[in-house]
Image (tube, rainbow, N blue to C red; front, side, top):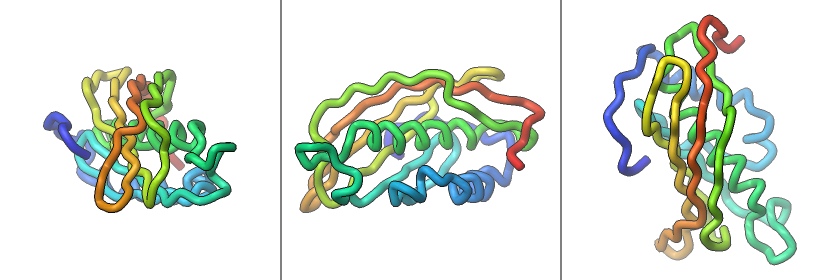
Length: 152
């Protein structure tokens, strides 16, 4: 969660709420993703690459990269919304810059602009190998705030 602006959460229990929501996500469990960090306006999610997540060249599949950075950006937005609200991704663009390969893949999501109805986030995905991080993808995302629709 690097380079993020300072934001004030609308709900003091935002971190616990994000962790509870993440634990309910079947997709994150399926790919073996881990919630590494949560802060006001930011979230980091990582996974350890394995064959089941790869494409034909052995790199982590672009769809998996998109999945973890979409969630990182969505949870970054979720840290800032009121207690009675939730969020949904309505759009994102992903640029793939290098193959996602290594010992770990880390997606960092951060809020760029938090509005009442829409939140714009940015995501970076890095592959880690032998202590070196390589930027493998950039995302820009639009999140819709659903007020009065807290998660069950």
